[in-house]
Image (cartoon, rainbow, N blue to C red; front, side, top):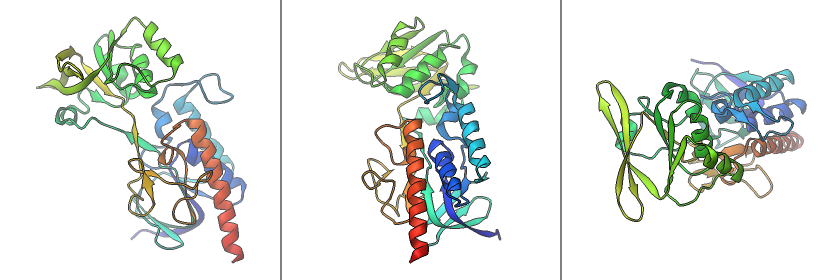
Amino acid sequence: MGETRHTKLLIIGSGPAGYTAAVYGARAMLEPVLIQGIQPGGQLTITTEVENWPGEIEIQGPDLMIRMEEHARAVGTEIIADHVSSLDLSARPFTAETDSGTTWTCDALILATGAQAKWLGLPSEEKFKGFGVSACATCDGFFYRGQEVVVVGGGNTAVEEALFLTNFASKVTLIHRRDSLRSEKILQDRLFRNPKVEIMWDHTIEEIIGSDTPPGVEAVRARHVHSGEVTEVPCKGFFVAIGHAPASELVKDQLETHMGGYVVTRPDSTETSIPGVFAAGDLTDHKYRQAVTSAGMGCMAALEAERFIAEQAVE
C-alpha cells in the first residue's frame, strides 16, 4: 500500500498554467507540489517554433517548458513525475490518488490538466494510428521525408502542422470542411505562399485507405460537402489537426463543466463550483487557448489559492 502525503497546495498539470501557478505558489511560501501527468510540459513539448511568448522572438516549445520547470523547481516547488488517476473533491482536504500508489491530500487544488487532441472518430483512423495516422507533426513528420502527406483542419494547429511538414514532405495537402481558414492571418499568408502546399476547400474525410501487410496509409478519401463528389488523395501520412478537447475526465462528475467538458470558472476568476478548487489554462479556456493566457491564469489561480488557504487558517 502506497504512502499518504499532505500539501497545502497541490497542482495537477505541467503546462504553462501549472508551472506558473507553481512559481507563484512557491513565492507565497505555500510549498506547492506539482504532479506532471502523462505529458510533462503539456502541448508545447510537441510544438516547434514559439514566436508569441513575450521576451522571446523565437524559442522551441520543449526548451520553453524546460525553462519553466527549472524556474518552478528553483523557487521551491516539489515536482512529481506521476499521474493522478482519481480525485475526491467531496470534502476538504481534497484527495488525489496516483498511478504510483501515493495518495495526496491538499488544502487547495489547482487543476491545469490542459487539453488533448481530438480525432475524427473513423474506424479506419483508429486502425492506422501509429501506422501513418498521427495527431503530432512535430513527433512524426521526420518519417515522411520526400513523401506526400495530408493534414485535416482549419485552425492555427492545422496550419502550423502543415507548414512544419513542408520541411520534410514533397507535398502537403490541407483538407478543410469550409471555404476559409480560422487560423491567424500571418500563418495563412505563410501557408498560401508555400509552393509545397495544396488546399482542398469544402471537403471532409470519409475514410483512410491503407495496406495491412505491412500496415500503412496509402490515401484518404475526401467528400465535397456540397456536391458529394469523392476524391482519393494519395498520401503516406495523415495528420489530424482539428483541435483539442479539455482533459476534464477527473472532474467531469464533480465540477460544473460546459462547452463539451471545459471547467466553468467564475467571471474574472479561476474559482470553480467547489470552494478551494481552481482551474487554469486550456482546461477552462475554450476561447483563447494560448500559452501566455494559460500562464496568466496560472498566476491568478495561485494568488486565489493563497487567499483561500489564508482565509481557512483564520476561521
